[in-house]
Length: 250
Ligand code: C5P
Image (tube, rainbow, N blue to C red):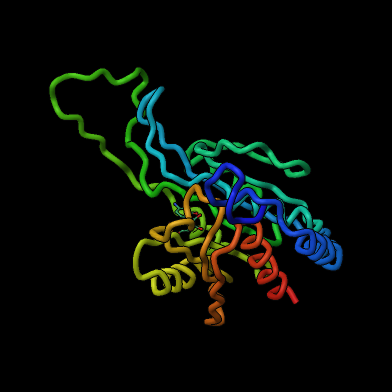
């Protein structure tokens, strides 16, 4: 949908796009063709959910929308897509895509390491929790008058592990959601995690980042290239990310 003034009086995403834009989009899709046919693309999406007890958890604001858009775009281009969703995702499974629902970072790691072995492209859009409660209470924790201290332990960095075992021909793409020093932190992560591309977004920007329909990102390449995109729908951002991946494959 296009963005602008809506019949309900508000403004936002929800307008019927101009017919000319719809036609152009169709022509572009047709012209693009099945450029990823025969390739396995693994995508992770959403936030992980780290249990405190049977009813409570630590989570984050990631909706999974960016990762789902990337998975759908890759499927439209003919790829065999496997989408590993974290526990905070509440989106419908997209048709034609194998979706593996996981809860915690540890469960996501297991699914990802297994599926990444034969994937040509891995895109890690998930917001993986850096820490998990050290102990998961078997019963619901009861309140009392005292303070409650949760001890957290470090989760493994899935993307870092993938980077360490990356095959020559595999393309590894990470995301960096930052609230400050966006470019510097993203470039540092690209190097540290041995990535080919990193998609950086400033999550303090309104309309960008967690649980929004649009995103404002910079795509940074291993070669030092920086592509700054305007505020776009997550579908359009997904297209640009896949175009950047395809140009690396040539
Ligand atoms: O280090 P940071 O969490 O900012 O890096 C973000 C990127 O690393 C994302 O692509 C995310 O999916 C991935 N990541 C991961 N495992 C973690 C933490 C982050 O795969 N434990």
